[in-house]
Every structure is written in structure tokens, then in C-alpha cells.
Length: 263
Image (tube, rainbow, N blue to C red; front, top):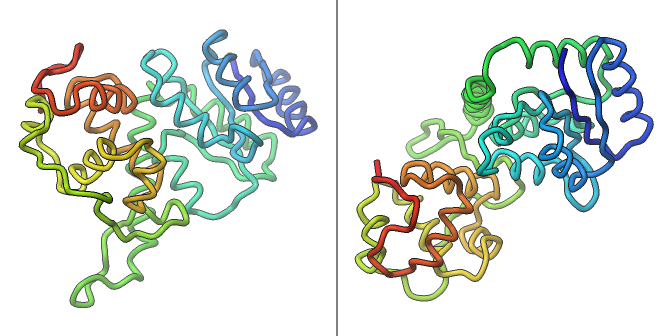
């Protein structure tokens, strides 16, 4: 059976999940908050993390983001099953896009929980499960968006910014636009979309990622997912590694340590 880590701030629910999974033969550890959960993941390396969304201080979204961007592949590839009292389909879609492989809505039956854990353990490696969940989420998001007309009355494509309550309009970073000819050579030669270039300009021009997101009026999940994608294309291990490289290299034409050829 599996080593399961349960991260939930509700004591009664946490105990119910623990007992139910232990009776099914699993080895179960529990944590009461997101910070404690992150420490336990690195210490115990569970087979599955069951993660509550709504927790104080460090919520489930932050924990999920930190797990999936962890430079240690053995941490980033741990399957995450999310629990939430929020029944909105956009929350389920967001969970899948950000890296969860399964999403259960409270209240749920004990049998549903046990079946979800067994399914997560029996369907192959986590990266494949994650990609399948992300693809399914994008299909569901596209279906939700079909009622919104785009140019010339055509349905618009999926807007990632619907995953969080922020405007989908994109603004240029404040101040003069950065001339990409001054970018480091390893970055200027990389293949990317105009939106990705706007994101990188904002990251290099703003004091923090929060300020960059606010300037662009893009969701946290979208900005982080694009940074992860760009980092992998540049041979860097994670989005945070790309941000550090940008701030360190700035306008120098030198490839940061550890970066491979751009694709």
C-alpha cells in the first residue's frame, strides 16, 4: 500500500481521513498546515499527498506550486490529490493545471477517497498523470469559454486568467519598454511568444513577481506556468531559477550556470 501524507487544518476531517486510509492498509502521516506539510514531504517522501485547498497562512495553492516547482524531481513528482469545499469547476480546472492529479470536493465518501488514492497509485508515473490531468482541464476550460464571443463573433479560446479573479486585459510594464536587443544572448535567441516576452520584460523591470503580475494583470497560475515552461526550454530546472538568472545576468550576454541550449 501507499505512504500517504494528509495536509488539512480541520482536525476532525484530518483524523477521519487518517483512520479511513489506515484501515485500508495505508501508512498515513498528518499535518495541520501548509508549512508543516512541505517540511514533512521533504522529510518523509510520501507516495501521495492529500492536500486541502483552504488553509490559513500557506494555502493549498501555494503548497502545490512549491511542490511542483521544487528542483528535486523526487519531490516535484509526488502525486497530489486535492480536497476542497469549493465546488466551482474552475477550481478543479485550476488544480489540474497547476499540477494536482486528482480533485475531490467536500463532502466526499470514504470509498471515493480510498478509490482516488488507489487510482493515483495504479495509473503510472506522476508526470504522465499530471500531463493527462492538465490536458483534460484545458479541454474543460475551453468548453466553459465557448459561450464567450471573440472577434467577428467567433468563440474565444481558453483564457487562463479566468482561473483567478483578475482582469484578462494585459498592460505593458510601467516605464520604458525594454529593448530585447539588450537582453542576454541566451535569452534573446530563445523561441517564445509575444506574451512570454511581455512577462519576462515585467519580471526584469519590476521589483517582485507580485508587482509583475499586477502590472500585467495576469493570474499567478498563468505567470508561474509560463516561467516554468520557458525555464525548461532554456535548460534551467524551474521558474524561480529562471527569475534568479534574469536578475543576476540582466543585460549581460552570458548564459547562466547550468543553462543548456535554448529550444
